[in-house]
Length: 101
Image (cartoon, rainbow, N blue to C red; front, side, top):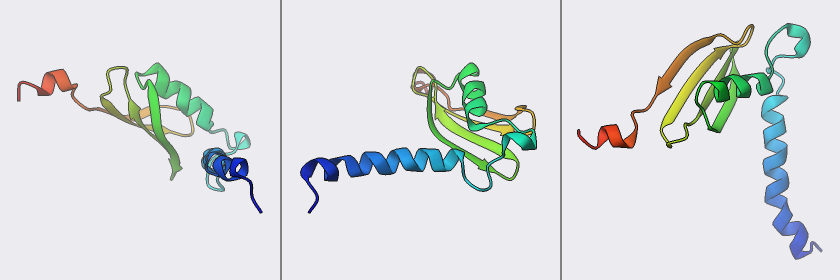
């Protein structure tokens, strides 16, 4: 029978496993492919204003990163996996700017 401790740690283990699966999925690039890693994509996103990454996924040769800046506004970014070039950067207007709408 499972103890309370092992039951409460179950969801944490699933979250940790799923995070590593995203970075290591079969379609994610390998270092030998000459493509940037998930960690490189996170660094580029951080360097360009994403303070909190909410989602990162690899799809068809691109890293798609979604997150929020330090003020909580949403940011979407698309990076070319081969060299890390930003192909799309979409920023949500800050709440303070929307207040006048």
